[in-house]
Image 1 (tube, rainbow, N blue to C red):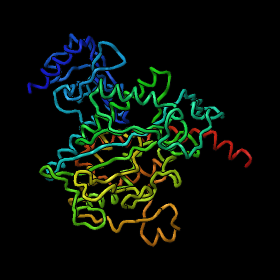
Image 2 (cartoon, rainbow, N blue to C red):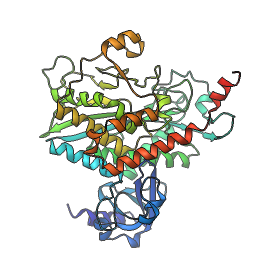
Image 3 (spheres, one colour):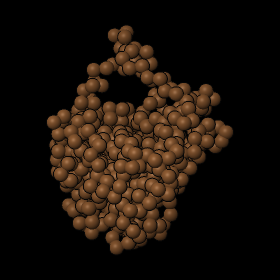
Image 4 (spheres, rainbow, N blue to C red):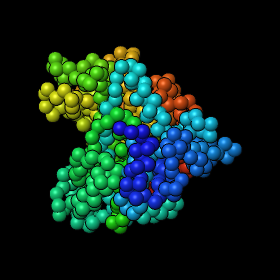
Amino acid sequence: MGEPALDALERLDQVGARWVELQFLDLAGIHRRVVLSRRLVDEGVFSEGIGKLDGSSVRGFVEIFESDLRLRPVPETFSVIPWREGVAGFLCAIHNPDGSRFQRDPRLAAERAVEAAREEGFDTLMSFELEFFVFDSVEVRAGSYESLVRVSSREFQAAFPKKGSYFLASPADAMYGFALELAKALEGGFGIPVEVFHHEVAAGGQLEVNFPAADAVTAADRLASIKYAARHVAAGMGLQAVFLPKIIPDDNGNGLHTHASLWRGGENAFYDPDDPYAELSQVARYFIGGLLEHGRALSAIVSPTVNSYRRLVPGYEAPVYLVWSKSNRSAAVRVPFYKRGDARGRRIEYRPPDPTANPYLAAAAIIAAGLDGVRRKIEPGDPVDENVYRMTPERRRALGVRELPRSLDEALDELESDSEWLRRVVPGEMLEAYIDLKRWEARELAAHPSAAEVALYLPY
C-alpha cells in the first residue's frame, strides 16, 4: 500500500475526475459540500486540508469573527459520484486554521469513541438498519391550517393495507426499481457493499437498507453516504427520499436500529457460549447496562428532533421502554438470536435511534454509554421476555421499567443532567453547541400549531 494521499490522487486521475466534492456533516447531521476543481486537489490537501469553509454560515459551528475553517478529505472515503460525470468525492475532517482539529466537527466524536474503546482494550463493530420512505412527491404547507404534509405514493394509490407491507414483493413493491438503482450506486460509486434491502412494514414505499458492520467511524461514514446517495438517486428518478421518523399518521415510522459489539484480539467480547440465556458475555451485559442507565439522556442524541417523539409511541414497533431482552422488538435493547453458536454474530441492537440522528454523534454516544457500563460494571437487570406494550402500568412499575423521554425538550433536560459519560468522546464545546441548536429547534416548532391540533381543538 502506498501513501493514502497519493493513492487517492491516483484514483482521481484513474476515474477522470474534473471536480471533487469535499463533503461533511454539520451538527444536525445535514450533508454539506464544497466542490473543487481537480487542479486544486494535491497531496497537501489531504495532509493539511484546504481553506474553503465559512464556518459561520453553518448553524452551530462558529461566529462570524472566527469563520475560517479547513476541510481535509479522508482518503478512505473516496467515491465516484454516479449521478455526475467527472465528479468524485470525499468525506472530510474539519480543522482550524492552525491545523488543530475543529472541536465541533461531529466526525471527531466518532473517532474519539473508537479511541476510547481501544484504550479499554476493545475494537468497535457497528452497523445500522436504515429505514426511509420514497414518495412520488411531498408537498409541505408550513404555517397554514391545511394539511401540514401531503405525500403522493403509487403504493397509497394502490390501497395496500397499512400493516401488511413488510417484505412486499414486485409488482406490489413499487419502489423495487429504485432500491436496485440505489444498491448499484452504493456499490459501484461509493464502494459500500449492500447486504440486504427490502420493503418495510409501513405502506407507501418504505424501504430498509442494511450494510456490513465496521468500526464506528466507518459505519457512520457509510450511513452518511447512503443517505446522500438515496436522495440523489431518488431525485434522478423523479422521486423523493424522506428520512423523517414519523410522516404518516397511524402507521409505522422510520427507525435506525443500531447493532454494536466490542471485540478484543480478533474475538467477539460479547459472546459467551456458556451463557444459557442468549450466549452473552458479562461485558455485553455491562454494555447493555450502560445503554439502559443513560438511555434517557442518550435519547437527545439518537432521537434528536421534535418529530422523533411522534415515532416513539406504543403500537408501531418503536421502543418506548428501557428494558432489554432476547429477540424482543418491544424492548429498547434487543439481542438478535437467530441461532446458537453464532460467535461472530452475537451483538446488541439498540432500537430507539432514527434516521434524523447525526451518524457520527449517534455512533459515538452509543459506544460511550456502553463503555461507561463496562467500566462501572452496570448490571442491566433481568431481561423482560414479554410484550412490554401490553403490560399494565402497575406491572411496569413493579419491574422498575423506565420510559424514554416523551419530547425533545425532556430529552435535552436529561442530557444536561447526565452527560459526564458522553464528555469523554464529545468535546464540551461541541456538546454545548449541539444542545443550543436543539433547544432552538424545539422553540421554533413550539410556536407552530399543527393541522391536527387545530382540527381537534376547534370545537373547544
